[in-house]
Image 1 (cartoon, rainbow, N blue to C red):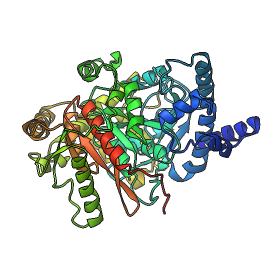
Image 2 (image 1 turned 45 degrees about the vertical axis):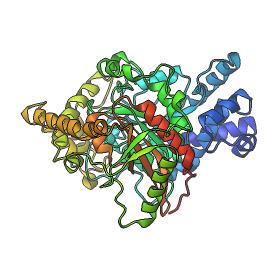
Image 3 (image 1 turned 45 degrees about the horizontal axis):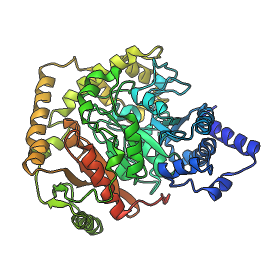
Image 4 (image 1 turned 90 degrees about the horizontal axis):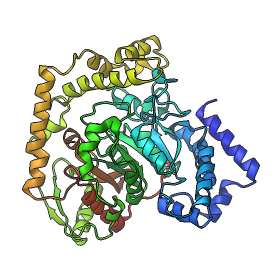
Length: 512
């Protein structure tokens, strides 16, 4: 049974058993666009149960997913998890996590030790058996969140081929932007962003190596948080490069994303080195304390005009972002305009900076380690995946898209002289670029339009938050606030202050 028929079956069963429809639920409590705080309040006032919420989302997935293709697989135990959450809530009404009984979708490169597959969108990993839940999933379950299913993505986090479009995978198909269906949903955490934007789930989890949370968040009018490297565990996540990989939340509001961030940060012995090093950044009392309406007051924010605000051919967007900069000023921020990141063109060029050569070698090493740790798997190495694709060209659409990145990565032979030179260059570019700029002007954050700053942040392991900011002929574009490692508290204050002062987000329009 495929994911759509399973969803439809669960939905119809719920309606026939309980005699109510989604219209009945929404009449009592408006689920669409509801925040986690709204859901938590509705739970506490007996206006809503987790079972009703899960069944609502199953219905929305059944209705919208055949078009949007943002969900690869539904958890067949989602309703059982919802019943468990309702029972726990009835037995102990106090001191419950904000995520208790709240459904969440996981990007399909995040392992779950349950009935769900973890495939990175590829048929080659279908049926593989995980040794355990991913570190962030363990924390989410501990917080009481319901794993609703797996979200679609750009296959292998866009590490198989340069030719495939954003949001496409063999298992999931082509993900669609719910605002304008013909436009780029961006990737690779496309399904995680699309599903939240289209109200198919409350919140989701994505991963980022080089823009994979920030770009889909920007393109789908949702909030995406890219945490400092190591703030969240990467254990159990299909890797690209541990040097740049990070796991973060996607929500419709800054507050929702922050609630999830609070649940997933912290030490994990399966990713000990990175999470131990980043543990010093986690504030006592968590991150929700930084959701301040006046969070912009007194913050020093830098503006790199070129190329991040280059709207020469789009005066409407230029005007929209100039208005946003003025809003930042009116809310008490100190804007340091026309600053520059040294060697920016080199950093943004994946090949010129040396990032490509380093990532290809790191990808092969990290992926081979991941595959060998699986309890059972049809493939045990990058070489096995390449052969699988060659043997199943129609299934994996090999003729259409190829596997050029895979082949380039497979041709590497560990971290040699070329890769070491590239890594040194990336460190130098980071040190003399973003870090130097932030320290020279004593900046709390950098503000940029869209997500193209992601390449700068990737090589340094820096955090960022994307917040909805504008619409270009119906297509969303976000504004990105980024900072030095561990600056999440300030970024949350800034992002929340900006969001509350602008309230740009609106539900999807589903324009053709």
